Image (cartoon, rainbow, N blue to C red; front, side, top):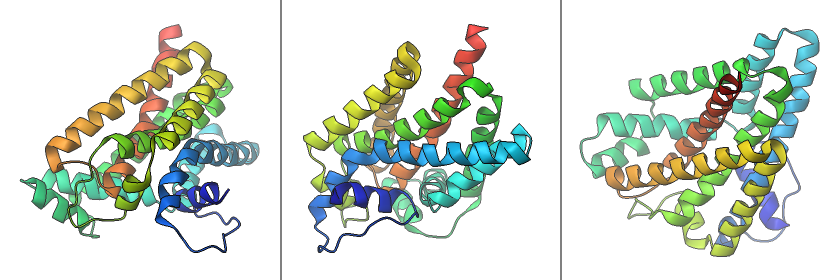
Length: 250
């Protein structure tokens, strides 16, 4: 269970039992098998909060509080990666320049714009969903977005020659963990949405593959920042696709 606890500690700020064993880099790769499960548990916490918020506030305020709470519970870790990625892509002219800008912890104009757009679209998409599907859609958004990070880590080369935060994950993620994470994401997609869940799973998988090719061309691979950007983008994409499914059904 050490791998699960590590995944929980890395993806959330919520406390859990800490292992007394010395950290082994192999655990970092193995922990990614549990990323979709962590997404599911995080989603269940948000659903409980959404129910509580809805007692005191109208739906619009409740949805806004959920978007805020999600950022807080994850330590805005993936949002930080998104901001750095936007700055690097917009301001750098070569792969090395983009990587250098992404490493700078200061947030530039494009990073701020990226954060505003992604948080705004996340709120608007969530708020547009009917009450009867908002819960399972939020769960699936958190599950598939975290699965996409596993997919990217397994398939894409690591961009920084000098290494970085994401390198130990890349070096120690094996096929077994990739299969476990994928099987979990498929099972939960079918559980929550049946046929449409499979469609959402396929679209997120295809989009993540395009995401990979794009960053291989722009910076030579992935970094920890691009994984965070992929997570945030895919969260919003699931919510938007669900909105489109609802609109199409009518």
